[in-house]
Image 1 (cartoon, rainbow, N blue to C red):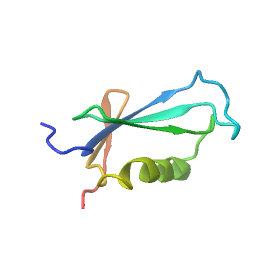
Image 2: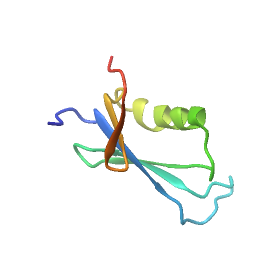
Image 3: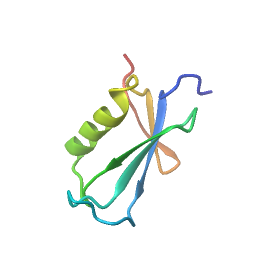
Image 4: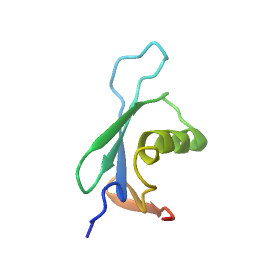
Length: 83
């Protein structure tokens, strides 16, 4: 049972949007699975793992603690260390 805000985070991509001045087209959506609150971030069509981790840190962990669970596409992908 989820009891901690931003303890379990899912992500999704919205790809059919207009290009921004920074050449960003997709939007990454980070969702708190308890409250359904979201953080949105524009990104490039291709994004490397390090850039994605930096985006997650900037959009989620700067305002909330590090999630203990990260879910993608309705299945558990990895557990993040909590601490």
